Amino acid sequence: MLRILLSILLASAGAGVAQAQLSRRVVPNNPPVAAAPPSLTPAEADVWPFPEPDPKTWWDDPWPRASDAADPLGGRRLPRGDRLAGIDNGVDASTYRLWGLMPLQWEVLYPGEMILEVWVRPATSVRQSVVRVVVRRDGRAFVEARAGLACCEADIGRRIGFDAELPAAAAPGFLALRTHPMWQAPRMVQVKEGGATEGVCVNGVGYDVILLVPGRSRSLHRACQDAEIGQAADALEPTLRAALGHDPRFDVLYPGGINYGLDRKAYQDLIAQGGSLRPDPNGRAQPPGAEPAPRPEPPITPPAPAVAPPGPPSRP
Image (tube, rainbow, N blue to C red; front, side, top):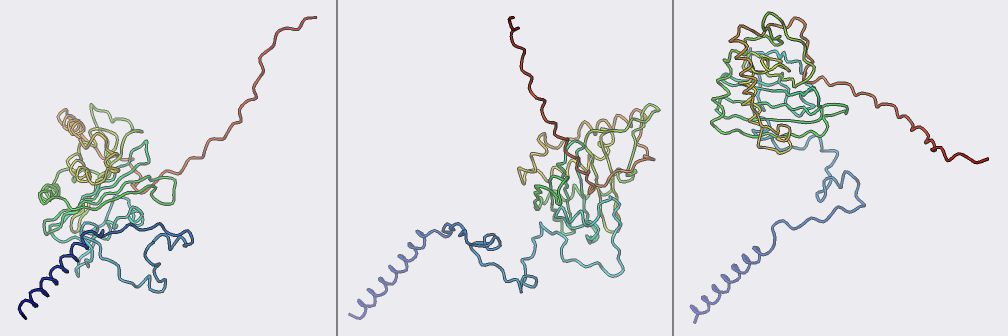
């Protein structure tokens, strides 16, 4: 009799557990959150349905650590006796922070690591973008990309950005670019062809390409002329392609994809025909952080009063 009673009790307990599991499956894990009540302050509504943070502990409360993709070189200290490389691309630290990037001047690289950075500035648009590829000594590579409207506001208007880890096979291709001959060229150049220097370009796209390795930095400014851009095509293509496919709002800035084949051929033809890229004695390119001043709105001219058409001649 005792054994029968124990069997009944165990069966009842098992049925209860099964019923509880079934109930948990039916109840949704994330019930919909009701809209914030209109009586809340803007600060409270911004964090609804969570409570507003305590102002007294706001500055001291621990924050989540940034992921490797968001800060690949975070938490490093400069080794004793080492010095950071000087950056000659004309972008100061405050401009990097405006774009939501760690300033290049502060990045600490260990032996075998590198950063390759590209700024893209169209001459006829304020839609600018910057892409940074970081390769660490553990063989992992990351891309950090930003885009926005760089004009006429106190910040980067409509700024978007993302940080992602690249496939493992990407690192060797970027590391091979550290010894590319392009880094031996002057930062600013002129196209010299047929005994004459080509005129100044007023339209097109300007590129700033920066290489940072431990203790050394090189920067190239290439704009407008196909041969100029073609010299840096081997760095432009893989860097910008690494930023595609992560955010459609970024991809729309490059509707035709990334292909500098024509620019590369223009540079190769220039060299084959005896031309060259000479240092530009008067070249003083604006740094990527320099924005054009907003133009004043044209004055509003009131429309001229309408003139009534002449009527039929009056009869005497």
